[in-house]
Length: 480
Ligand code: SF4
Ligand code: SF4
Image (cartoon, rainbow, N blue to C red; front, side, top):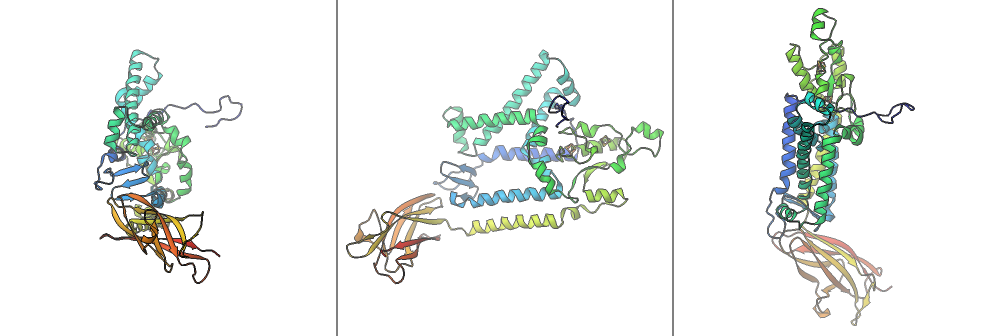
């Protein structure tokens, strides 16, 4: 936080945050989501998916060397990158949808920074003890015990960081093969470099920077303010019920003077970003709801109704303040804005599914030779030359035929054929999961009705049982 000029330091000194352990519904939900996200992250590269002998059997693989992205039954080629773009757009709209409905649920439960920080804090509690023991240890002078605890903690953090950074590289190569190569020192240098960088960043961000990433580094808290509105669910302190704060003893001595908040500070003690939600909505609140668990427990202990801190919309807060009752939660979740996001999200998803289902697994592209543009043959016909690429996106070799449409009297041959073998159709066997590059000559009569330039189309057709076809526009040039 910036401080006024002339006051000395430019930035406020960071106050250590030592969140206290808490139990409750939202804590257990966070455990479940943490377990699921970690299992997905660490386990996904090890899932096998049989694609036959010509393609890798890793279910999710970004194969940079062969420029392919595999995701279970789906294989994306470089020219189909719009599917990846579509997925990213869906992820963005999904975030908008979640934020406008339930605030920063992503930040509080599933963001990698939250998940790994939570994991590191759990390790910290296991080694150093809970909040009070951590504060005592942090303030204590260096001793053999403190040094030993620090070394053990940092080693465990480092191990988790290494497993995190190490798992990332398995998404880019066959995991079992890369693992063997990694440990025998024969993996590509980039694998060691990526593991090193990701280990270091996980160690620093999860172990030391923690809430500072959420408060100062991440742009999402700023963007989300545009996503939230008065009907979004956010963690709210019911100040109309909680104020004036006072202990149970004071409240008993002065009936009617104090609210339900007993000023125990348990909501602050459990907060992973160290904020006091009683001061109202803040950019530091990641909506993890741990303060709800803490306060509910306190309310149970002092025999008062739960929900002094709760998920609540601003609209409902105003309604309650004036003595009204909150609306049903479904009414807050389903409103024109969230329905709009949901429709766009679903529409893009369905369009992508339809496109994936309808796409042909053969593809053709053609590029014309520019020098010379045309050649006059001894029989008077005109010849143009093209580099034609036939793409077979199936994991098996496929027979294909190439022909031209819209160019009367045209015949074709390749540089592996003689001129007198020219035919209207060329057959080619394209290896599995690859591109066949053909140099194709096209000859057509010198005289044709219309302009010297004539548009036509190369078409390719797979001639096996599954079939499939594609076409590519091209141009035939004659002397003027
Ligand atoms: S935990 Fe509840 S009762 Fe205790 S200070 Fe926070 S809001 Fe008040
Ligand atoms: S104020 Fe509550 S919901 Fe917000 S970050 Fe702190 S504990 Fe989580």
